[in-house]
Amino acid sequence: MYAMGRGVPKDEAEAYFWLNLGATTKDKRAGRDKVEAKLTPAKRLEVQERCRKWAETHPTAQN
Image 1: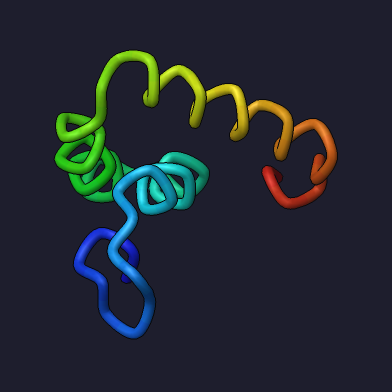
Image 2: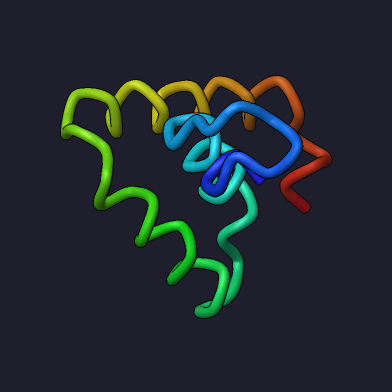
């Protein structure tokens, strides 16, 4: 939704955040990688750090 701006403002960093958290299969990783390619390296690292922090505070969500 964030990648396309459907129902929410278009936000590739937010799209990458959620796609990165859910990238458990090859198909899902492909979607994440398309959005990732649109981000600057600095923004990508910022979002990856946000994902790491989210995973630390939501450990059962990753199981």
